[in-house]
Length: 417
Ligand SMILES: [Zn+2]
Image (cartoon, rainbow, N blue to C red; front, side, top):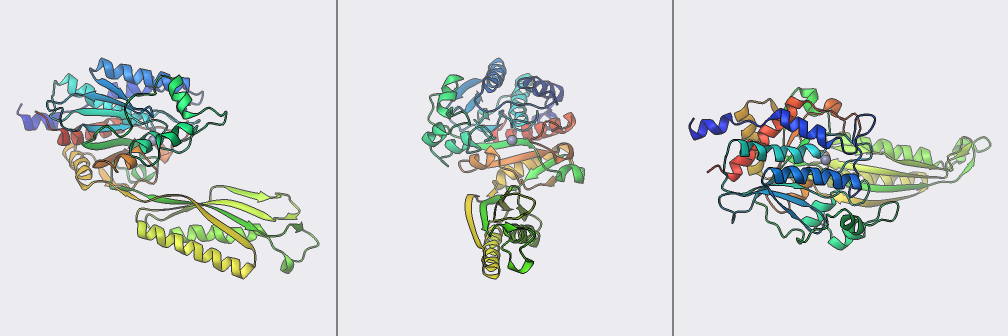
């Protein structure tokens, strides 16, 4: 077997990958078949210990940084080169699934196990990372470990974050034994790949196996408050009302209309609404609601932002009601590196999987990794596009295909010797 055909024929072990996923999913398993393994809990520690144990068994060395990010390393022949890294997270939502995050980490481990089986050496080292508190469910902000790693916010800010019981990230990291020594970010990355279930319905709908991810959408989050006047629903004539809910619904309709004006990647969502006093026979006096705008193009996202502000101003003038709008979060779109996107695309073509480009609408650790190194992502379908749900499901053959693409994309960057 010559070197070239050997490379093309190389495949990971899909059954072993599936078995690892199912074993990790036992830790925090829920009655409905999902997983509840919140960041920095005892269960998170058990999950971390299991994965780290597997990595040691595979001959990997372990480094832990001060925010609890774990880097599991397989040496290359030239260890002066920065590692080709893959990874994701193993914390879950309170009603999470078996695959979100866990797949990205265990696919990396499976790549290493495969290289070990085949006794393949790479020039650059290979590393598999799991990042602390990606989900942001127990502690905010989300994508905490990778965010500290790339300097998006400070270690002190992260340590001070509290859960609902007042426990801090700093205390909990120390308690579970994952407060490491390495300064976050003091760890070179040559290239970063992340495999993930799509968490949306596009691949399944198009009957494709591999999503090549050119970019992640940017997002803007807002809190909007409309103030009217509470009054009795009977005696107050229609023309003399200041109905905060009716005015709010005009804005909510416009949020969706704005998104529809910027296809295919415009998104507009009102997901949270509070009506006061929320009484059947009282005209609503105040309504608070969230607005979530997304697009993959920052200029268009900004245009959507401007159009929304203009509509709110127009509505304020027309109705005479007080309306406040505050932007509470903003992430710019994250285009992935052309070389990493191409590595995923050519690996997919070489392996013969059906494929399409899928822009990610959800956040991932790869966004922060992309600030420090060339990065790319690989998506596989998940059933009905559902994640952050105990019924989250994915097919073994799709997970295997994504892991094969990961193997070949990483080898292109790390180079076989
Ligand atoms: Zn995830």
